[in-house]
Length: 170
Image (tube, rainbow, N blue to C red; front, side, top):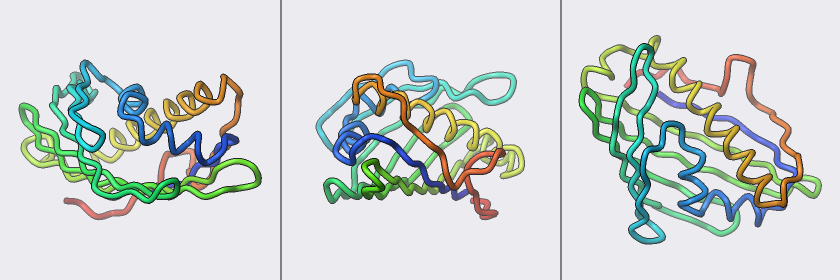
């Protein structure tokens, strides 16, 4: 399942880059985070409880930064294991200056296997969209906090239903 979108921040590129590349800041953007352990600047692990309808899926997720070109591009791989699900995700973002602020273009390819993954895209798509929206809203807060609490995110490239998604079911 692929999701993608764009976001505008009124913060400078360096500020947005700093938040996106700080494991502690990124941990604060993750919904359901229960614990977080930084191994080094390219590897970290999170234990999360992902809301799934009536309950939650506890999952241990290992993150590896695959590539970066400061301050414009980074690519991350995440592999999660939990009872009933295996998740693989590759995500990347591109930053550019935009009228004194920052334009971010992002995309993620999320693959969920196991019994949870067998629920299919129609069931999982709204859950993935909600989680992406939660992460982006939390990222907005982290960037604003890094900027000293100034307001300043305008959304673009997202519909009222959430981020752009493809119809690929993996």
